Length: 146
Image (cartoon, rainbow, N blue to C red; front, side, top):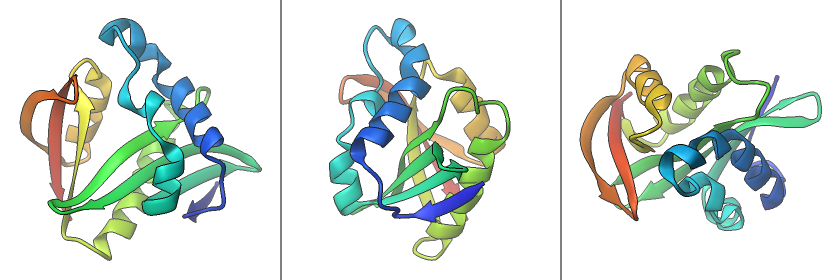
């Protein structure tokens, strides 16, 4: 596995991976999850992207945003065929190492129908801070101290 922070990558590659990773949730939500419609060019231009590659193929990525209210993990996506192999957990190790250099905690959210994600974040040590409708999605918000 090869890890890169702010790699030279096309927005289309991030969008394609995200669409594949999140398409399973469309029937549960009745619409595309936010990572499937995100503006990845804006993220490339303004935020931090951490990618994982297996040889030359992009297999996972994370988007980290610095906002007025702290650091946010905006997206975590693992390519189809790589889920369940610990790739996301390995990626989170790199995400947290990066964030620890700039903040003592960070936040994220997931849709309430993404129960596997919710359970995974709790296992990773996050605490739930609130649940609410946000930007048209029913989201669970989390925080983790580093």
